[in-house]
Structures are given as C-alpha cells and as structure tokens.
Image (cartoon, one colour):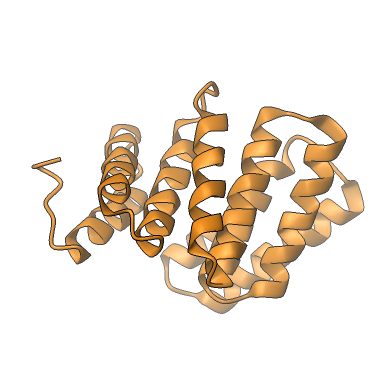
Length: 171
C-alpha cells in the first residue's frame, strides 16, 4: 500500500503505511516476508527525509540479517544503509553499500528488487561523482523494469537518465 500511495503522490499516507509495516514487523519479528517491505520502506523514507524512520527500518533489517544470514536480508540491509548514508550526505558509503546490495542480489531471482536497487545505486553513484557507472546502473534498472512491466519504476529510471541529458536508446 505504501508503494501505491507513493506512486499517487500521497507522501503522508505512504509514510503512514511504512510506519504500520514496521510496527507489524516489530510485533511478529518475521524473518522472511517483511524483508521486502522493510527494504522498500527504508529507501522511500530516506529519499523523503524521514531519517529516524528509515534508520528504524535499517535496524529491523540488521536484526533479520543477523538472525538469518539470508542473502536477501543482507542485501536489504546494505540497501537500507546506503539510503541512510545518502540522506546523511555520505555519497561514497551510499554508493559502496548499494553496490554491495546489487552484488548480493546477483544470485537471487528477484528482478523487481534488483531493478529498484540498481536505480538507487545509480542515484548514489551520481552523488559520488561516478557518472559512467551511474548511467550503467540506471540503464540496467530501466531495462529490468520495462521487462517486468513495472512502468513507474522504468519511468523513474528514465527520468534520472534524462535529467543527466543522456538518452536510454544510446545506452
């Protein structure tokens, strides 16, 4: 629901849904089903300046990753750390952590998550001044999202590339 609210531009409702997800997770301490939502929530909350809530999601992911050691949980934690680092202005750490998340996802059959992480890695790489890698990650995100029919995610990647004055067709 948070994704839908965010896509429709209702930030308050999206944050409310992210907070509800975290609250539900805290009551259940699930180590499987909550990972995806906590990862997305950490990303959205950090992107929208909700530092404390993004950090709470990262802490939840750290507990899951510590308890399970599952690759998806470790990748989600790296993604959340990258997002909170980007929010704090530490572009190098953000880029390193989001690259780590992508590397961890390489062996997983989770293309939507990989596309989202690639998009955010591109943004972090831009902040770190790594333009070519940024464009590669954004093009990867766009290609994966289009292949999945995930139009909002594909559009976001295309918008990031266009903001750089580049063309996806050339990529």
